Each structure stands twice: as structure tokens, then as C-alpha cells.
Length: 534
Image 1: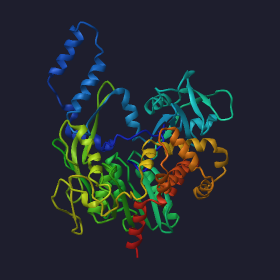
Image 2: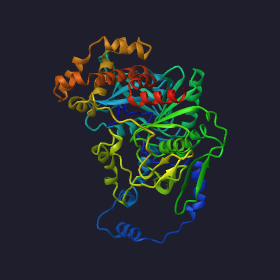
Image 3: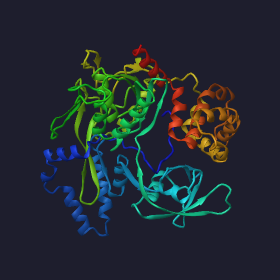
Image 4: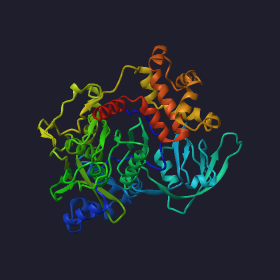
């Protein structure tokens, strides 16, 4: 279970978690590998498709059939290679791009209806008067509610070519009739840094959610803004960051390392060895740093954490990372589809490959690894962790580290279960905390919007005694109240619901400042970095 849920976002959709090289490096590697010079003889698959097209008794949708065959073939490889049909490619690429074209809202699907969580400042929707709390019930004069509404459909519908129009039918609180707004799609930036704030007088906290085209630029801007506020040391939060472009992780790590320090290297059967070393121009190479990771930190997150750990440059705090050490390269086809093919493995500076074990063609078993780790108690106690690779690798200062299954933190912090209960886990896993917070915000938006800081809003919410209302909401959803559990877990769901309400009004920065204040991993990180700085 993740620590919290995000709203579905039109600005940013979910990550694939694939590790890709950046465009320039990809082009250079493609030239050296010689993709364009590969010549393959006609295969049985080619012949079969031709026969079916020419001789089968009924007409055949060959494009659809080919896509299905391609998916099946690539699934026989490693768990991270993937075939991307033309219809999905734009959406997939936009996840790591600098921007995409859309209407500029964050949304959540509540009761089969698209509810707008927030409107992007300066975006197309704000310009025509769409408001947070509005509900989209029609698109281009067609009903847009019901069981068929899901995140993917909403994103495909609201995104589109820049300059094109989409007509929205909006239900707004206090308005008896549907309001109509015509929105002209425009460029919507994709942000990688969720939040950057001070956790004490000298410690800056930066949360990075992925490694996209502009992540390095956002990251440096965040560090600089915190330094102006007095930060002399930093906590870099990569928890639940599933990765992205290798080059962005390399540029970020370079800021903290000395000239010549190895950051990462990669090589494959037809992929020339590629080494990335620090150039000595890093602006924070003497600054104390702690990196937070967890079981959902993967790929480029592990490159950054591995570089910090192997160079003895920063303390890694949290839980063992995902264990993805494979490099994918995206190769386009003439029909607009593409394949993301694993072409190499990457290695941390000490020489370890942190890729967890897998069997070719057994992607389902591979993904069950996370459940197995949970069942074995790994998320709770360090002693339950058993890495497959027992080879010893050594950091710059001679500390022993291991590969073959993710980055092991220097300081392990297990999940705290002392306040957990069956009732709490049920309401969180079913997202009722998030749903209730949105509905509460929607009902009290006017008074909540007058509050300008997360501290003031938390105090206000704690005076409102919304807990009986929340318990009743969960009961209506099918989770009967258990008084002992409700009392035991009160600090957990109070914190979570309050944080969601803060996000709905004040955005991510307020959300993370409230949420991280009581987070056990963040608290340990603060303790570690202040202890080092004594």
C-alpha cells in the first residue's frame, strides 16, 4: 500500500516506470548499434499475416491483429520491454515530456462523475472560468458520466492538439442548470518536483516524482530557492518515484559529486559501454544530503541513490528500492507505434547491477515480487530482507554494499504498524479517505478558500469534528464502524484527510508540508542529517 493516493491528473498521467535514455544519447546509441542497418529475412509471422490478409475467408482487421501479436511477442522478453500501439504512444510519451496539449485541470472520478480538483493557474480552463469543484457531465454535447468513465478515457477526451476546442457541460454548486464552457486546448507543463520547503531552519526538503525532460531544471530551481531561505543541507525524497530518463538522474547526481566520480555505467550485447562521470562543476558537492527511497523507487531513482551511496556522498534512508537495472530504448515504427526494448543493464559506481531476478516471459511472477516482499515482512523489519546476489561490492570509502535486488538503505525505517487497524486499512485501500476529503472540500469550499496557509487550515479542520461524518461516509460505502479501530487509528486518518483537504485548496506544497511533518522516514532523515552536521 502506498502512503497516499493522488488524484487522477489531466496534467500528468501515470508513469510506466521504464528507464529511457535522453533523445541525444538515444540517437547516438541508435547510430552505434545500427538500428537502421538491421535487415531481417521475412519471418513466418510476416508470411502468416500476408496469407490471412489475402486468403482468409472473411475480412481481417490486420492492424489490430498485428498489435495483439506484437504485444504477445514482446511479453516473452523481460518485464520492462513493451510494445506501444499508435493509439497509446502520444499518451505514453507525454508522461516524460516537458508539456502536452490539454485543458489544464486536475480531476478525480467520484461516483462515475469527473470532478475537477484544481485548475492550473494560467491554463486554458482558468481562462474561460472553469472552477475547482466543477463537475464535467457533458463533452461536446454528449453525456460524459456513468460506469464507462475512467482515467484513461477522460485523459484521451480532454487532451488533444493545441488550438483545438472542446465544449464542456459543467455542473456547479448553487447553479440549477448545466453551464457551458468552450475551452481551447493549450500547452500544459509537466512538473516533476511536487514540493520544495524547509523542514527546519537549515534543512530543505525536495520531493521529485519522476525523471522527465525538465526534471533537472526544476530540481536545481528548487534547491536554489531553498538555499535563499537558508538551507545548508537537503533531503531528496524519491519515494514512489518510478524513474524516467537516465540523463536527468545523471545531471542531478553530478551536482553533488566531485570531478571524476562515477555516476553510473551501462552496457549490453549490442550496446557500447557508456560511462557517466561527474564533471566537477556541481554546485552542491560539499553540501550534506540525505536521499529517501522505498519499495516503489525504481530505475532512475536507483541510479541517483546508488551514485550517492557508492560514492559515500549521502545517507540513504527508507526501505529497499524496487530493483530495476535495465535500460530501455524506444524504437519507432513507420505506422506510429513503437517498441521499448531492453538494450542494456546499468551498474552503480561500485559495479553492482541492482536488477532483481526475473524469468523471461514471466512478467506476472515478476510483479508479484512486491507482494512476496510484503508477506515476508520486509517492509517492517530489516532482518527479513534476503538479497539474491551475495557478492560484496565496496563503496568509495570501503563500505560493503550488495546488488541483485534494489538499493538497500544505509538506515532502514520500517512501516510503523502501531496505529494500524483492520478498519483503517480497509478505508484507505478503498480510497475512502481521499473521496471523503474531496466531498468535504466541495461542501465547504467557500470557507476553506479564505484560509491561506496549511497550518491555519489544519487548526481549522481540527476544530470541525468531521470524524463522525467520515465514519458515516465509510459505513455508507460498506465499511462498518469498529469503535476500537476508529480510536486507535485516529492520528493516521486525521492526518491523511486533513492533508488531502489542504491539497484540494492550497496544492501539493501545503499537502507535503503537513504530511511529511509526522512521517517516520522524514523524521529519521532529519535526525540523520542534523546528527551528521553537529
